[in-house]
Length: 250
Ligand code: 13P
Image 1: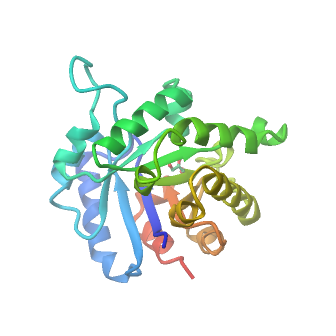
Image 2: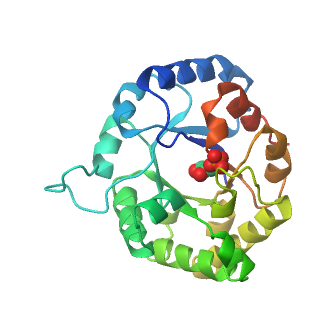
Image 3: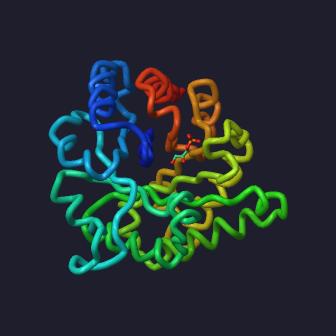
C-alpha cells in the first residue's frame, strides 16, 4: 500500500536559529500528527548534519544532490554524503532547479540514479509551465519528464521513488491547481507507471501535489483518489500551518 506523505521544502529560507526553532515547534505539535502520515523536512544542506540527531519521528531530506561520482566536483554534494549523515530523502528535479540552474531531464535522471544507488528515497518533481497548460501539452510534457527521469530504473528501485506533481504556475503564486486538475494529472502519472512497470508498482507509488498547498485547500486536494499528500513550500515555514496540512487527511 502506498504511504501518505507530507514533506516541507524550506527552499533557501531560514537561518540556522530559525530552522532550529521551527523544528522545536514541530516536535511540540507532533503528537497531533496522524500516525499513518509520513512527514519529511527538506532543510538546506548546511543544517542537515546537525538536524539528523534532532529530528525525531520525522524524515530528513536534502533539496538536491549531485549527478556526479564522488571526487573532484567542487561544491557538489554526493548522495552518499547525505546518507552517511542520516538523511533518508532527497528532492530531485524541482522546477526551480530545472529553470534557474538549467537542469535538463537527462541531468535529473542522472541525479535520480545516483541518489537511488546511495539508498536515498527520492521526491521526484515534475510539472508544466502555464504556457504548456494553455497550449494543452501539459500531459506530454510531464510524461516526458517522468519517462526520461524514471523509466530507466527497475521496479525495485521504484520503491524508493515518490513523485511530486508541482505545476510551475502554482508554485509560490497563491494559485493552486483545482482538485480536479491535480487528480487528473495524478491519475495519468499512475497509469504511465502501470504501463511501464506494473499495476502493483503504480498502486504502491505515492504521488504528492505541490504548489500553493495550504491549510485551506489541503483537505480537498488530499481527498482525491490519486493524491497521496503534498510537497509544501511557503506553508512549511510555519509550524502551525504545516501541522494543519499534515492533519488534513480525511
Ligand atoms: P509553494 O507551496 O510555496 O507554492 O511551493 C511549492 C513547492 O515548490 C514545493 O516544492
